[in-house]
Amino acid sequence: MTDSPLAPAPDAAAFRLAFVPGVTPSKWVRTWEQRLPDVPLTLVQVTPGEASGVLRDGGADAALLRLPVDGEDLSAIPLYEETSVVVVPKDHHFAAAEELTPEDLAEELVLHPLDDALGWEASPPGLPAFQRPETTADAIELVAAGVGVLVVPQSLARLHHRKDLTYRTITGVPQSRVALSWPKAEEAPDLVEEFIGIVRGRTVNSTRGRRAEERKGQKSGQKPAKAAPKGAKKTAGAKPARPGKPVKGKGGAAGRGGKPRRGR
Image (cartoon, rainbow, N blue to C red; front, side):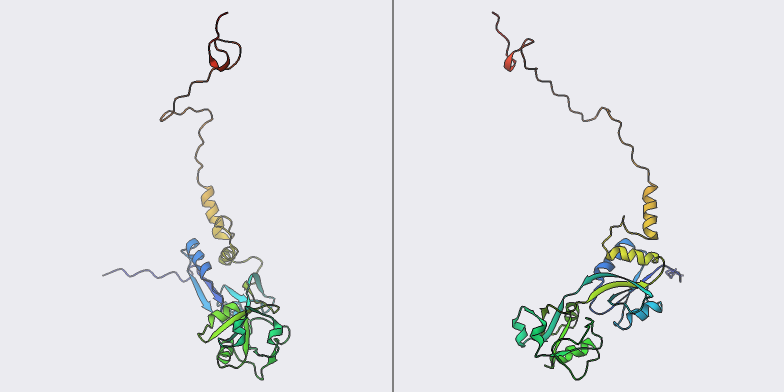
């Protein structure tokens, strides 16, 4: 009879991180695995419209999403801004430009998907389409078919990369802001606090949370090595002292340069 591996306890610590398309949490996940190897991190991919609901329903402990956060019952800290780009077919005349402005889009049909990530206060520049695509992926298909252009965060342009499409940076338009969000509480849960420390670039010693306090406690319990008393002489391998140089001056047996004086 062989022993079967033990299953993890039902209440074993774990961390579930939701993220929206275009956001890549891989570098933070690697840091998590190095610092907390005993706490599994599970990634949960969600659509932009699902992110807030997943947090409220307890489907994730925290989420990487784009601002603004839906509702005041969620906390959020901005992490970074994304560059906005215009996605066009490779044979489009915009492909010859290095950078675009909203004025360049005046005569273009600009698609505005329902899951738009830029949060335009008004309609995007250019000519509006008769119907808004359901998703960014649907809008990308229309661009590939030669029906309009699309303004999105650069991360989404890379996510939906196609050989027949390209993109160019555009200035003077909204930029997406990626944030870390979690259910609002008087104090963030320990594992959420650990992840906040990771995304903010805190070191292991400066990270907050219960586990950080445990690590500090372990370090403070170690006895520091005793320093050698001042004035202690080295024994093994000690080098012999060099003989002192004769003092220059008029007195003594030696004069200038240490040469003996001639008698008068």
